[in-house]
Amino acid sequence: MSQVHFISFEGQRRSIETRIGENLMRAATDNGVPGIDGDCGGQCACATCHVFVSAPWAERLPAMQTNEHDILEFSNERRASSRLACQIIMTSELDGIEVHMPEGQH
Image (spheres, rainbow, N blue to C red):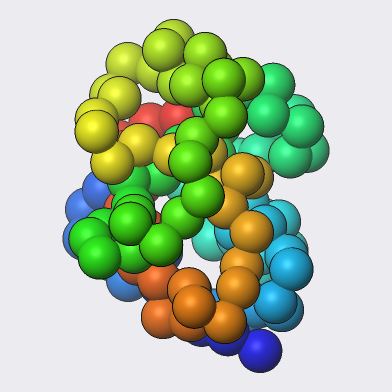
């Protein structure tokens, strides 16, 4: 098991345990983390699991694929650190990752 820290727009921290190989969107929705909706079920077809990945974690992630980039183009709050939680697969190298959530999921 590995730990993920979700930080709400208001600064509230919610830490959960998740399995290696699970995506962060599923970990959040399975554990009732507010602010991660996951409307498409992890199919990279919406931006309702948009997160901002804190450094140094962002450098440990695989490169963003074209479909994730295209979906994030429609996000109102896109930043350089933006990713979709459904595209972040938990690995042992990501144990303790921090992700911040935007004000809303669109």
